[in-house]
Length: 175
Image (tube, rainbow, N blue to C red; front, side, top):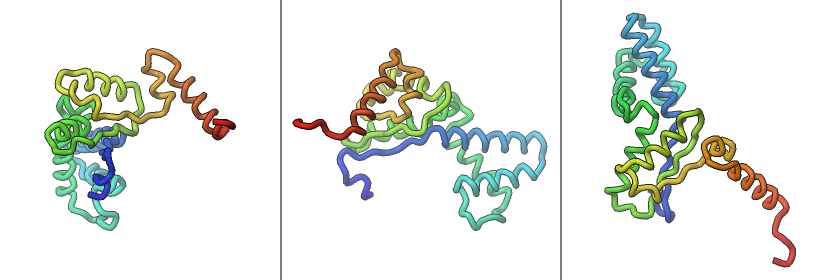
């Protein structure tokens, strides 16, 4: 609630971690379904603990419940559907909520991008008819070198380097 008192307010979508977690949970669930090996559910529980889906002290959490929890997460994220398989399920969901919510100053920040697919998928999403009206409500944060791989010009990195050099020198005298 306190974060929403600032204007504009920002909501984060950490897409790399979400996609990595969904991929790992789905792989463990699929392997368990194929083999019936409960050791995979032990690995799933350890993963849920490591990613804070379970409290740190819950090291003996029921394996069946761990399986059901991971299945619910995968279903909620629509990971097995085209709309969620790209890891942008939270981006789509948040943009849809922002469109209908009475929070006109709130923006979505897409964070933690990497890989060959993340930026092109976000670009495609924002160019889609469904989200064309939301482009001003979204900010993308990434390393300049990452963005430069997808930008049409190398000036992204050049500008960042010049800006950081100028900023490190401090304010110009007489200005």
